[in-house]
Image (cartoon, rainbow, N blue to C red):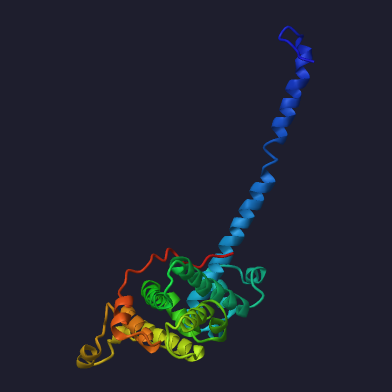
Amino acid sequence: MVRTKSEPDGNRAPRRRQGAAAAQVSPASPEGPAREARGSRRRRETRSRLLDAALKLMADRGVDGVAVNEITEAADVGFGSFYNHFPSKEAIHAELIDLVFGEFADALDRSLGHVGDPAEVIAASVRHTLHKSRSDRTWARFLLREGLSAGMLTRGLGIRLLRDIRAGIDAGRFTGDDELMALLAIAGTTLAAIATEVQYDGGAALEPAMRRRVGLPSTELPERVAVAVLRFLGVPAAEARRIARRPLPDLGSARVAAA
């Protein structure tokens, strides 16, 4: 029944009490989700700190050279908290491979998905890898340690490189039909170029005459590597140089993100 303003105050009092009761309950109702959200955020932040610390340590010393307590100390996290996120250091190492290189490979796929020429796809992938190594030395050192590991060859970058090699062979774009040798040649050349820049300071250890002879340091090292791998795959020299100097599609941001 609709009530009017002429009704006695007593008839309205229960509604005020109900409103007061509701006011007491309503602030509490979102507190559960708010607490849960804060807890989830802290968990994500802790996981991210553990991954970042493990990446830096394992890039420098490898998985066998790092202990769990060193990861937690570097992350400023309690030792026991590590096992709330990862069952072992091998588990966090495996996740790093998936995150660091899987995410980069996904970014390559998004950037180059519209490119129909397998030669251009591989050239751009090599160049992006060299540029990424220049901008993120921790990423580069981790890649140098893991570049030819079983994990890298069976998922992430390795699987995608094999796919692109096979596409080029099937299309008659590349000569030869040995996918493994092509994979090893491309990966080995790329890793050697990264090591030249990261571990040997762009060839600074060489005598000046030798540096001039081999062209180091080289701002165009990514393009030189791309030309070399295309030549190995059978692309003519002039065409390989043209492909290696085409504008690079934007890669966007690829970074480690805790799940």
